[in-house]
Amino acid sequence: MVLTRFCRPIQTYLDYGAGTGEFASWAQEYLSAARVIVADSSSEMLNQARERGLQTTSVPLPI
Image (cartoon, helix red, strand yellow):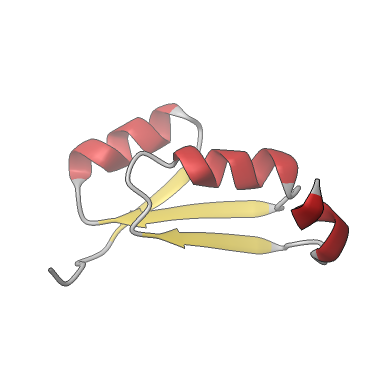
């Protein structure tokens, strides 16, 4: 995979405006990120991200 070939090991990956955390889950698996945090303003989206086993935080996002 191209990203793993050119990226250094990632300690913490923050997905700001992550929605359900689908891309963050991918990053955790394929980039071997030690810690993945999903940030979004929608509690519904954060609940789905938690169901994926991701650490979440609620943040206000500008429209």
